[in-house]
Every structure is written in structure tokens, then in C-alpha cells.
Image (cartoon, rainbow, N blue to C red; front, side, top):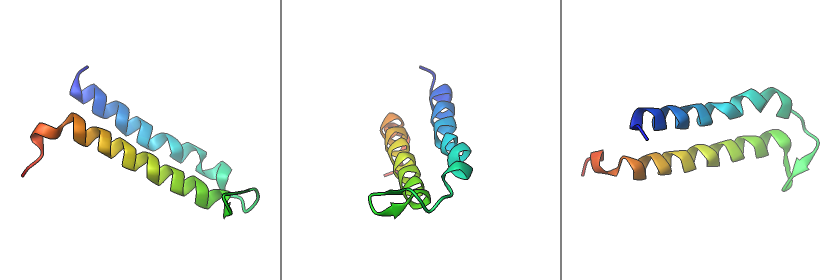
Length: 65
């Protein structure tokens, strides 16, 4: 797979959760004791972290150090 295409897919996957943000702005229901919006933001943060780890390992040879 072309690296530019791979990075474009990662970028699109990173912005997809923004589409659901207006629908998650509610206090009820609670998930794991947190309001839905907080849980949604936490899940989004973890998704972005996982995508960055994948991008790091795919492009490991270009990392400085």
C-alpha cells in the first residue's frame, strides 16, 4: 500500500468521530460512571493515540534518533 494513501486513511479515521460529537452531548446515559460526552471524548483520544502508534511503527525508519 502506498504510504500517502495509508496516511490519508489514518487522517480520515481520526476525524470521523467529530461527526458524532453533536449526538453525544448528553448527560444521560452514563458509561463507566461518566457522562456520554466525557466517555466519547476519552474514546476519541484513545483512538487517536492508537492511530499515532500505528503511524509511528509504519514509518519507523524516518524517525530521528
